[in-house]
Length: 389
Image (tube, rainbow, N blue to C red; front, side, top):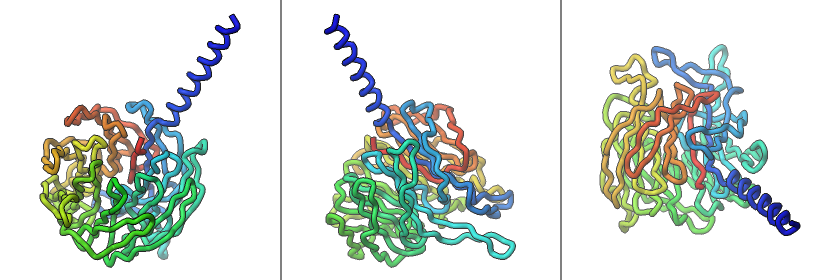
């Protein structure tokens, strides 16, 4: 009997530990809500003072029913690519770039660059802000390397990249790399030895070398399409894809492209451009490496325009080696911004800014379908990134 009771207690402890491990290992998504900017029926910006923005942490243990496990009152912005935040590989910390501030200008309100990066402790219950770092002017897209030791932040107005060291939960500025042009997003290659940065107004993609914590820009640029806003790299490191916005961060009624960069070529080069639609912004590549999605604005925040659509859509791209092909379009919500695959590649989440919700889509092989499920949010989702596991 004693042996049976001891075995039962041991079994109970093991089950509890497994349950705890599963809870901690659940995928997380970080979402930035911006409550400072909307548009009226004449496409005129409607500004509000800071104080209502939030950064949300979503637990995706049940992918069809996300849970908000963190809600931090941190300022962030819809201006810029929707990748101004990231979660480190251990799910210990998150970084959030605060790009734009709204201040009083007499009786009016005006927008201007900010320079802060927030460090969030994800292990705390609930998650909490533990540090605020000063980066360059208008920090925007950012990325953390797979080793979890280094982060890069693209400073648009500062025309530079801030290099951050990560040691546990300690994050420090260790360098600033002059880029000479406005940069909107920067992303590491999987091996961590290089990074790519979109030179937004110069219509180029810059290649950087990474050696340990030393990041060097040797003035090697690739010609992208017009206004490259966002960039991502396939898990095998063979190719990179861009979102060539075409209209300086908006829609204009004409089609735009995704540029395909061969990273194995010596030197790397652009090998194709795939037409994806009007105003690509959000961009994500499946962790399986066989699919990518480009988020198309389609004029969905510009009611007076001839190219206005109530909803934006996703353009689904199939990846076969270095060949990228458009396979379908899927309508989502108003002014879609953030997009992220779950770590297992089975689900896809799209933040609909105007609708204050997230579209949940299912991935089956190389096919993506809308489940019809929307997850309501307390604010307007401006950005979002997924945990690595």
